[in-house]
Each structure stands twice: as structure tokens, then as C-alpha cells.
Picture 1 (cartoon, helix red, strand yellow):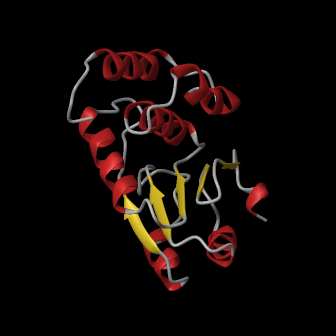
Picture 2 (cartoon, one colour; picture 1 turned 90 degrees about the vertical axis):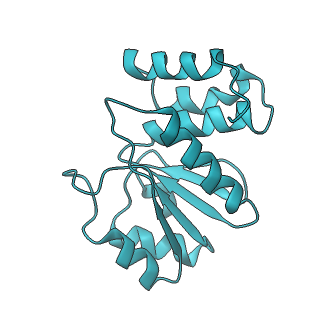
Length: 151
């Protein structure tokens, strides 16, 4: 069932990423043992699941909503994502947005900046989903080139 979620990727035993899941797919996420759902999508977007937080919590999972505006990803957005990942590093975490584009870029940056992965290896999963557009490539390049110790 999880494999049916749009652009689903199982990254590790405890981390999966995807596009927007349906109500039924959220039930499957819970049944698969996930404890936390992190949503980088916008709540008012046409693809968004109505009352997603309530649906996730009804299945016994923690819900973290970190909306990232598609046209304007920010360093603050990324910092909040890193904090959420680190706060839940010992839990099984399912991360999604609309199409796993925001998430794949943020996960690659997390792996590079926090886990020490080589850039080419970290971006393999991004390329399975998409090739970042100009906005996102500029954001990625700026983050990687600023050598910010807070990231």
C-alpha cells in the first residue's frame, strides 16, 4: 500500500518520503509502524488532505506541519526541518509534501549538512523524483555554499 503513494521512497528502515498520501494511505503508514508524519506541503493547496493533522493523530501518530512555499524555500524552513528530524531521530518518520520534491531536496541537504554524506550520493534520491528547477537549484546552491555552522 505504501508503494502506491505518489513518488514513495523508502530511504532507510526508519525514514520514508513521498508525495501527498490519501486518508487510506495514512492508515497504511500507521499500520507500517510510523510514529511521526512531517508535512512540508501547504494546508490550503488543492492537493492537500483536508484535516490531515486530525487524520494522522487519529491513527496514533505525531503530526508536524512545516509548510514550505514552493516558489520561496527559505533557510528558516530548512532549519525547522533539521530540528524536526533531529528531535525524532530515534523514531520511524514519514515525510511528505505534494510530490516529494520539497522533501527530496530537504532530505538531501539534511544528509549532506547533518549526516556528512557526499553531495552526489545525497542527490541520487532527488534525481529519482525530479531535476530541481531554477528556484530550487538556486536555493540548494546557496545553502551548500554559505558554510553556515547553524545548519
